[in-house]
Length: 337
Image 1 (cartoon, one colour):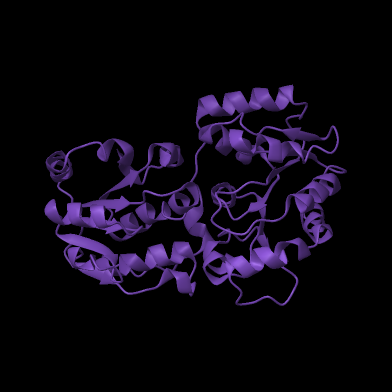
Image 2 (image 1 turned 120 degrees about the vertical axis):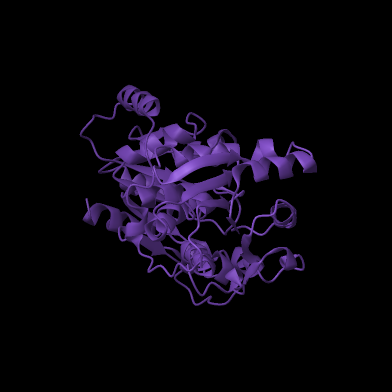
């Protein structure tokens, strides 16, 4: 294949999806050192690219969608892309990349609109034969890149904004956490894409960890009440609704460990190199095999009952996630401190 010069990667979904796609820029540039790699992202995930020298630029998807079709085509053509990877399937984007005349258009082969792609990938991600990051890397084979993926691909991926660092340093001081004091983050909420650990288990875990650590609870403003339930003593601090994404990234960079369900911030923590514990059901398309933290410093906790192959409705009805032993989780965190 002729060396690629300008490449667009579209990832217009959520935080975790974006984190697991960002390494592609560096991987592409290892094979095509002169290539410029651009991402098309939503506004709220754009801070994830801060300080990433492998990324030439970010196209704001939210602004892009406000354009007319002719404006979109003119906009895309102005970049003179010679390849695009449509990572998350989208009829609209597939058609627009075709109309923009981008020569190499890589996307799934399993949609009725897949004829818009010049190179089609025939893999069902729901089968979870590979991790989501690995599926993303495998799409690069259509550009002649056969990469041997590893956790090292995430080294140095996430950077902290100086202003956010200053804000978090001051906030930790105000919360009574000393600069050299180890603390643990618990993030009990999720985007609803998986089956979560029950709040009762999080409450127990908060109590266990608060014996030896300060525990910081994070979440969105809408999750404040959920997070407040985990405040079992003065060593547990509720920061739900207080942080934007750059500040959350900064907080994670200071933490000793991060604990959560299958949700975007767990991938930020894994990429940041801190210890991670995640809770995952045995449902195939929600499993850790596809969505777990991609890190050598992580451990996944699954239901301790024989429920392999069940579906989401059955998992929720049987409350499988409540079988995860919080003593084992706290032991994992404490024994590695």
